[in-house]
Image 1 (cartoon, rainbow, N blue to C red):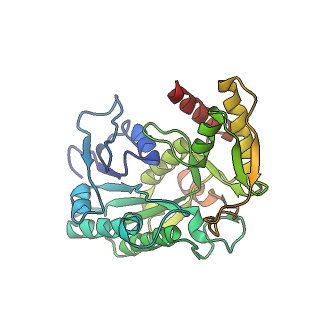
Image 2 (cartoon, one colour):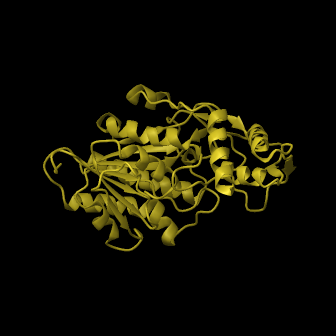
Length: 324
């Protein structure tokens, strides 16, 4: 650690959804920041002057080593696709899995005295696969169904092995469905449906909408990474589930979005319509998944604090403001 004791925290994917929300919180910490992304990373107006902002394609050989050089903490929030869209091989697999190997290799090459660097990695609750109960607590055997989940699990195992070797202190936070409107981005089904509702378009759900998801507000997700950073030594070497611990059906979610959006449009709530699943639906799409974060809470004290209705109101409000 250098620069008068301020650790260097490198955020990979800093311009993205969770990344931009986390950066907005990190600027208040006594750290040096290096923000790395393919797109420009917005820097909050209250950020220190010495924030290092870099644009880089981390799928290009050598770019990861440059990005993490000298890091005390690396937070890997890179994402390419999801369980529906990710494919095997190429840039997708490189971003979702290969970058973690490059991080480990780079940090191994510059090992220095003192505790190993901390590496926080964003995994997914869907890595467990569909052959388990809907409510999971992190102790289940993994049986990933999709290329995306297999890539995430492979990266997680690389990080765990490097931790066992003393190269890094690796922590994986497996996230559920994260939603909201972050400072630099919005993504996911909630944002898509909110935009449709604000435009007066009907919301379509597959089947009866009974599938449940654990819906975590993006601000709470960012706080989970801060909590993990503060307790990295106690968390290192394994994965931890992060979520609200509560399931919300797709029908309830879409109905709530329609009702909140109507307050901005002045019209009646748009209808929520049932449609058959498309041909491209994956085996995970009809699977209800609810994450029990009790183990993570016991180690860090973290809990999701923003109620669903409030989080949905914040999201719709932000998106409505963008339409003006």
